[in-house]
Length: 143
Image (cartoon, rainbow, N blue to C red; front, side):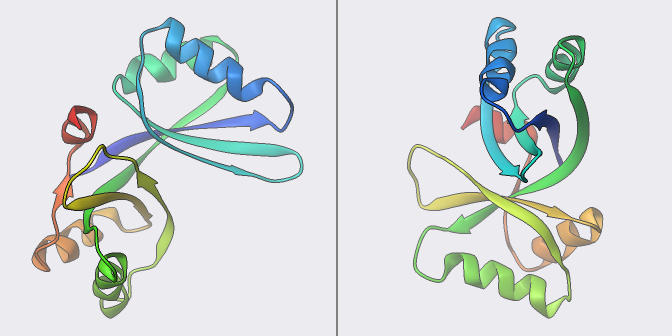
């Protein structure tokens, strides 16, 4: 199951992140997970939101450069070595993780990690064959 993620390119200057979150708040769009990476000149804000199409539209209308991509939300055992066990499956299959970040959940036996792969469908199959639970976008938004 793929999860749609939006990526916003923003100038690395004071107030830009606040503008983005303000646009989303003004349009009743809930951020479920995020990752922010930056360089000296710009940043990439990756978001999983509850209303992807609306978020993309209102951010573009606000003058932001927005793209969409598919990621995978994976349940990871919330214990010592939990993430290592999932990464071992990927290593054995020779799948490269392009990037990953955590999804903050209230509580439970599992953590959730967001993964981006070049070969998303192949990654889904390998993870499912290994008995690893993959969550849908709807499941992420319901947590």
